[in-house]
Image 1 (cartoon, one colour):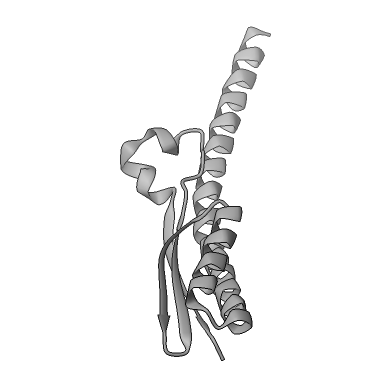
Image 2: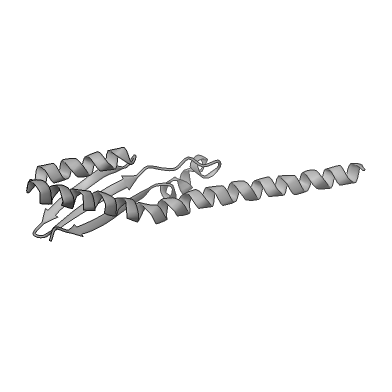
Length: 119
């Protein structure tokens, strides 16, 4: 009976470790995958604002507002001829293990650039 309990606890421990690793890897993957879409939304919002107001300052303000609402940081805003380019920083995700390992912290956040045409 004691062997069954010990074996069950070992299986449970392995299962919990696997869940933690999968969760941490999923957090990193989702940050990388969704960051491009989030940057494109910020760029498209800036283009829409520019089309409505024809003001670069208004476009930048709208981009900053949307980025802030989504928990992002707008680090760069460029307007060149007929395109708007934005660069955003996606903040690090909270994980069980990876955020405690200093060498892996850069993988928790992302910096992404997106461009949208004004026309």
